Amino acid sequence: MTINKYRGFTLRNFKNIPQIGSLSQEDIEAINIVGQVLPFKVNNYVTDELIDWNNIPDDPIFTLTFPRREMLSEENYNKVSELLATSDKATLIKAIHNIRMQLNPNPAGQKKNIPTVDGQQLHGMQHKYRETALFFPSQGQTCHAYCTFCFRWPQFSGMSGLKFAMREADLLHKYLLTDKNITDVLFTGGDPMTTTAKVMSSYIEPLLDKKFSHIKNIRIGSKSLAYWPYRFLTDKDADEMLLLFEKVKKAGKHLAFQAHFNHPTELSTDAVKQAIERIQNTGAIIRTQSPLLRYINDDYKIWKKMWTEQVRLGLIPYYMFVARDTGSKSFFEVPLAKSWEIYRDAIAAVSGIARTVRGPSMSAAPGKVQVLGVNKVNGEKVFMLRFLQCRNPDLTNIPFFAKYDNKATWLDELVPAFGEKQFFYEKDDLISKTG
Image (cartoon, helix red, strand yellow):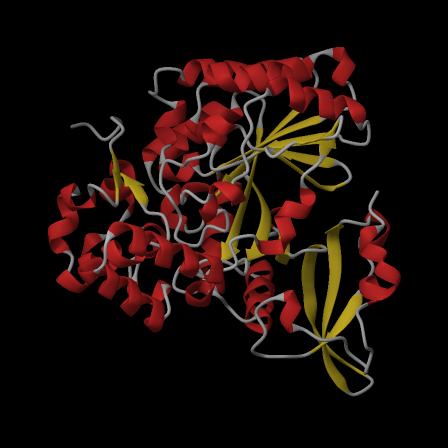
């Protein structure tokens, strides 16, 4: 077997992973138990090229892709373990569903963002911010490997009522023609790079027509560079996919490839460097983003190394996110105060051309909220915050303040500073007044 031949492993066959023998019986049991609740999938590139099997379970790429016991509460872990040993399949499925529903499978009110056209809800789209529409091609609702922190884990868990997906290209195009405020279309998932070039062309090429002149930017959100760079090197339609990227550029539009890199190791192989170069040669610009995650990158030195290498490779560091309040967040979460300190120290440690990162940013229900810092105002210690994006675009970039809380990890754990009853955006339901 050569490394560039795709071989995937799921909960069904994970014991066939060649290196599985290096795991303890406890680790193997945890994969089986936690994997019943949170989706598990990995491939031979990740297992052979990225994971240091001499550093298990502490290796960051192992933790990014393999379920660990601590990702479920002790109560839920024990419940699933007992049911696996004693219960019928129907009882197990029901219990797992109940546990999943406790893990906030619909963070930030994503269901509120579904648009309509001619009275029909478009369940494969989200339109939260005025200029940007998200599209979830049904053929791309999987990934080359699953991140254990993923906030879209219901997409892969059989939770059909919470899944975003649509294959009707004509409905996507019809909706985009109804709203000329939309300048950006973001193809997301899952991972749209798990689908074929032919399918992606059916969605993207019509957008290059002059009747879509208001669409300036095509974005593709993908983890493929980190988890399967051979998508752009040796997959059977790799050249065809890159040709599609070139067509976007030649049509006078911008192609933004939003690459997910969580750790410097993901940038270390020859394959990823070659794939980056091939994408760049199409005229596409690669921007990078990642949540800040405990056990993975909660040290400013890791971000410094990652951003420095990204800039060297011609990538643009773009976002440092706060891990969303869903799934295994309790395992990965970092307090907002510490998140800001890591961001501050990392930014201070890199050159100006790497200081393009916005963060730490929470993609919360009202919008993307950036923690600008911690300070004292009139003797009160506070978080300084602002909206990078907001449902109501008029509220973007307006600073506001929250009472300092060294344990808070998400926006809804914060309270207004200075004795205020509400944050400014909550007054008179300003958030509902979206553009």
